[in-house]
Image 1 (cartoon, rainbow, N blue to C red):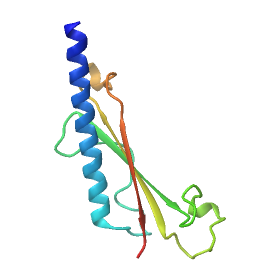
Image 2: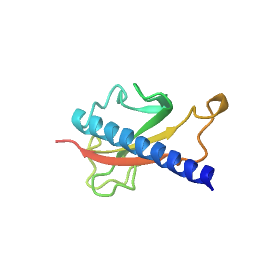
Image 3: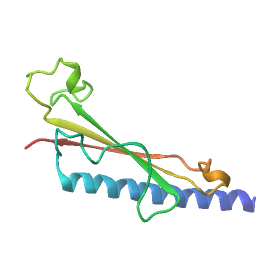
Image 4: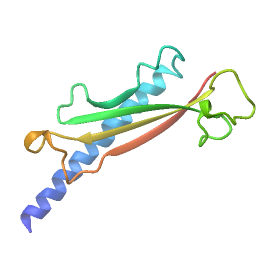
Length: 123
C-alpha cells in the first residue's frame, strides 16, 4: 500500500511539472507573437526535444495554419472563406512528457503527457 501511494505522489508531481513546463512554453509563444511565414516558424519542434534547464522532460511544439473562421480547416487545404493570400490564424500545440526516470530513458509509465494549445491571429 505504501509503494502504491508513493508512486501516486511521484507521478502527480511529474504531471504538475510537465503542466507547468507546457504552460511556460505557451507563454513564450504568445510573447513572440504570430511569427514568420517563411522560413518555417523557428518555434516548431517536430521531434521530441529536451526542455532546456529541465532534465527528465521533453516536448514537441506543433504549428498549424488554420482558417480564421473555422479552426478545423487547415489553411493550405483550401475552403477558407474569405480566401486570403496567407494564413491569418495559427494553432500552437505543446506536448510535454516526463522521461529518463527509468532505465534506458524510457517514458515514465505513471505519467501522462500534458497537451496545451493556443490560437494566435495576425494583427
